[in-house]
Length: 373
Image (cartoon, rainbow, N blue to C red; front, side):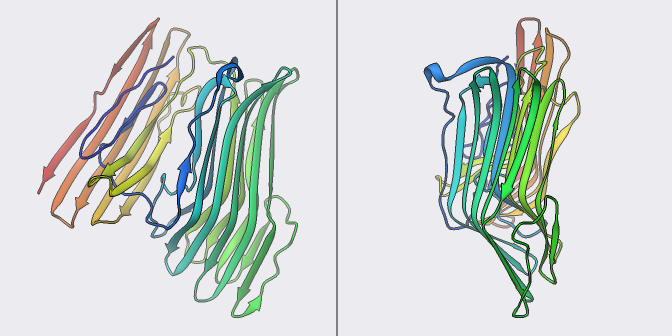
């Protein structure tokens, strides 16, 4: 089951998906952090790509900082690799951020370096699997009280189906961890247990190897973070996340798509952005529930600022002949150059409905409330 909807306005912006996608057509800027980010195309070459009876999905990112003054790349996710729902074994995507990604939460400086991610699907000897991996060379945190540094963080997830049913596995680790407060070292265990929390007074609380996994008669899923760090000033940093999932029971086919608040480039390509407030649709949909990814405000380069960014999606498989996906991207307000240009109430919508063997596509719900200059 396939389809797409596309839109373009105020620069170069595009929304597209496997089944449906939407985008609020307001271009912004990518992270101003030094470094180079590069994503590989999906690979499913010739004989290696095999159709299965299962739906695969996977994602991984290097780091994500919330609750502070952060310049976003892919909704705050660095080196984000995402594999939307597919029935193909033999697909692969990778991403990397070669340089440094700085951020700030209150008075705390946050820096990650050397993020690499990979998501892929396999089939071998009757075993089908969805897999994800994330690694971060270094993360450092510093404020006026003390500092924290971790190196060599890595996570892996694997979800698979064999003759015995569905299974999941999660692993995580790191090489070194050092911390100090007021010039005095703080002990951090070399081999913390899964879910163990360590406090660096006045700097952060570190939760190691946090995640969840489940497997039942219809699916298996696994998520793992190398560390989740709660900063002293209430910001939250997640480092080296991997997630994978495998599903059966795709009665209407494979669903997919995404709602995105912003993606594109502006001013002749001098201002660019990845996907901000990105809400993807899973293989089986959302069971009719509305799922959202929202950011309150984003302050960007070249005098660009945005408020009220939301990507959302709703999808369901009702029967073998009936299914739907509705996705939305919204930006409440865009300011360029202060108040030189103000755009309000931008909504990009894409809707795809399956009725028997027919797909009905439209962009109903796409609006712009006002533009003033």
